[in-house]
Image (cartoon, rainbow, N blue to C red; front, top):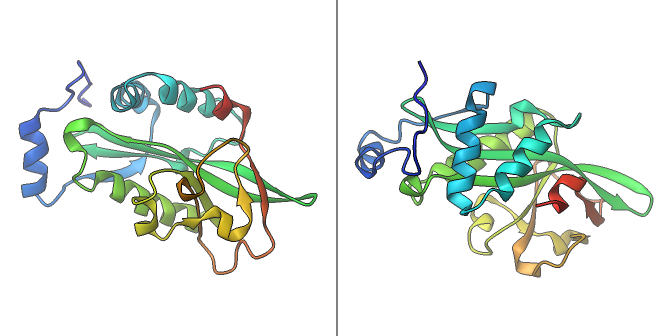
Length: 195
């Protein structure tokens, strides 16, 4: 039987400390239907609200949702982290380039700053590459995402359809020169604008 999240704490701080000693025995794998409730609680706790949790639930119901790109970090059978990569378009002078948006990503508080998020990002980028995607876009912290190889999207002539600081809007090429002829405005699905 898979352990269930019962309250806001989910896993004790002692368990979180044990993970470091055990060499981070955390598995990264695609979500299953049995994970949905845990993922919802995880995002609600991590973001201190339900906007991101509702976003994930809505995107699951769309035809372009890819289960293999909705990954969970699992410790002792409990979901402690989640990341979603979702297809988006870059509209470039009448031409559309397909990319992925990395959003949302969250880790329960007692496991934050223990490289769980980093593991989700790295394994997610590799999974996206193996599935044939050529780039990933993210809005995020200016000091966090560059360490994974993300560059400012403006370097490629890519902009967001909403106001975001230049040093917080990133893209990474998963294949060399993937964005060579792909500048323009990112088109997020309407679900992203509803949170």
